[in-house]
Image 1 (tube, rainbow, N blue to C red):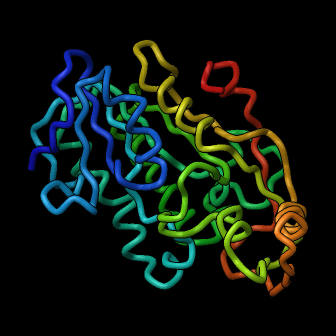
Image 2 (image 1 turned 180 degrees about the vertical axis):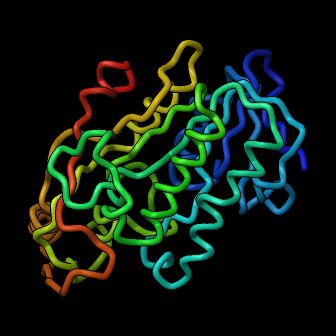
Length: 265
């Protein structure tokens, strides 16, 4: 199945999977005018399953398509592992790829870490099938694209038009909910703006862009309860605390020094 051609401009041929998702919809405008761009997304009835694309040649693939919900991964771990990891095998093997750029997670792959470095990810740190699926996906990419991959481990992305996300981020809930419900509250996260994430993908896709694995975040550790209380005061809305949900880690922040040195941030 061929992907839909969105632009006939001359230049590098780039495929974005998951283009209609949260990150993809923000990233698409950065590429549509200057690249020979194609996309596939499960919301597109004609070009939906990236694993069915074959016999194509791409200068770069930006792979965003994924099952992104930690909660759903706990309810259906096989679907999450299949969509996020196992489908990568035919996708990579059946196409010629110049550079494979992958959206991984820095929030579910490290476990409890303060300013985690890229070499500190481990299977033991993955407390949900979602985290495990991204860990396995990274290993598959390193094995099948050993010299032409760029893996971006994203912090907790927020901002932009985020109401249609498959699973709302904390900021979205805090802007909308009444009362504001916080599960746990003492957790710390590395929150990164969607604009920062998009720029990292653009830099990774450029000719001569970096290869390897990089954390993409703010490099700042912020308490979830602190943000909830800010929104509560601004909106004059009560903040209610409930027990921490299964599969969540207590604290994580990202060391982003390698990404800065590589020009991604």
